Length: 307
Ligand code: GLN
Image 1: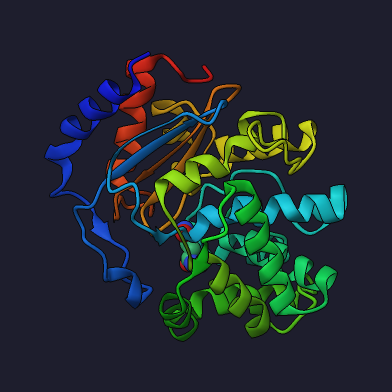
Image 2: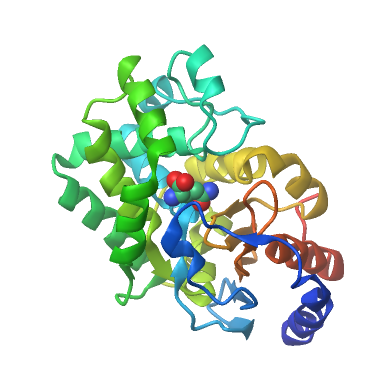
């Protein structure tokens, strides 16, 4: 398949959409991006790589990081983690409080904010220290992307520490129900740092290859997780990876995917490739508007959807 030709077609077909959507501004420092930047990268199982646009631009991965922290939590806690969070789509926005109240502080899934905050709390309990926990997550991502040059953006992390009251409410509510071991602010500082990790589309498309390959990286051989857990993570990406737009994403794109409010989306084509697309303007549900469309065009043109 001529992937470069397909990517170039996509790049030109999405250009009429640049006027649509809004860059996330509820985390003030996230606004400081070029609204019309675009990049799309594919990494295949043999390491061959195709891309268009600003594929060397490091952007804020935000909730895409939840895949990596959840994988680590599964490695650490196995099924026990499901005592503290569910595996059902929420049908609600990623930062919704209402459902968490009537479901007694147990988040619906690991990919909404409340779920990822619980995952972070569990990782801090395991690693005993917030800096060690953050470094474990970062070095896991470095191994998955086979790249040591990955770090976080302190300005974005601090911007979210100063503005993240809704996340503080979620964490405090869970604490009141006994589903958080540490102080809400302590957990959130590490969670915000994780969300502020910066990566390129190239690095991210490489980092999710383990999910296309039964849990281990086909190039380096690094075993990130078991086949069964990789299956579960992919299932959760399909059903919960785009919050209250997960059904729509499955309907239009048909791949396991995970978005972040920084404008990135990763997607997995089982046994074939990892994909990442970046475009910072978001739709109403907080997912990259052009990124979603680009992935839809990709599966339509290539027939590479799981359905
Ligand atoms: N850091 C963001 C938040 O917690 C992540 C949300 C997202 O990317 N959907 O609000």
